Length: 123
Image (cartoon, rainbow, N blue to C red; front, top):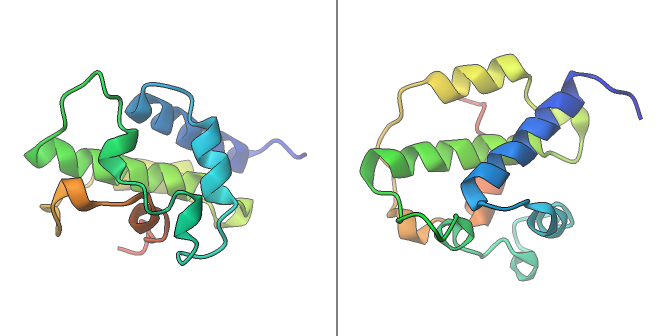
């Protein structure tokens, strides 16, 4: 295994999910990365984002919910199974520092599959 920036960005994705979830996301990452398409919801893609958040914290609302969604999208992009498809840390920093529009759908309805299969770095 070659150690490079793409390994660092993968570690950033893991750490970001750990902060969001309140625990190491190992099992979640394993089940989601085994999915090769959005149609394989039986492996966890249909899980609601709110259900994997740290349950010790209140459900985020309004602006905070938008930040959580962006952070989760970025984390999943960093975990791409193909290292060359992962964003650079510069792209991650730019994405996290952009102003956030309001959520297009209700936070309670957002699934992990929607976050995993949305390219966070096209806009």
